[in-house]
Length: 228
Image (tube, rainbow, N blue to C red):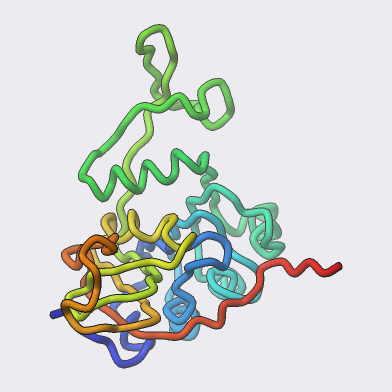
């Protein structure tokens, strides 16, 4: 059985300054918002964050940005966060932008123990500048390295007490692969059930990848509201 953490503050208390974090979700969908809020309140600094994007200014990773707790971010999309844009332009944060499919594969490779791989994505663009390239079957590929993290903070829909996880729709995007690529994975879940209640065929992340569990109801904020 996995450790069920009673508070978000306790769940993040072992994350030190200078840690590398993977943070699941896509925009505001499927993000570990309770864990991120606790991390912002704790005030750890000099974090390297690996995430698809940096959310919005006032929620999720945007809270860490506002507090200047992030020194580097590896992401594929950062267009919705004005504070992120300001910090990049002023040289206050280091940003490594990666094609989205490449980012997903780098995380998957890290979780699978694969140190590097070749991909055609980014060849002939500034992304490939200074990187090793090779030609296979007449086509050029660029070398990319697998990504690993000290801690993976992820969001799941249901978990049993052994840490087996299921996800709700698009929250399944980056969360499962990040669960496998963190040395310590902390899963924030909406529903905790007993062992045997989950259909084995529905389990996406086996409990072997999860070290800590915490239950928290999402606010489910709207990233961009469009009205007629």
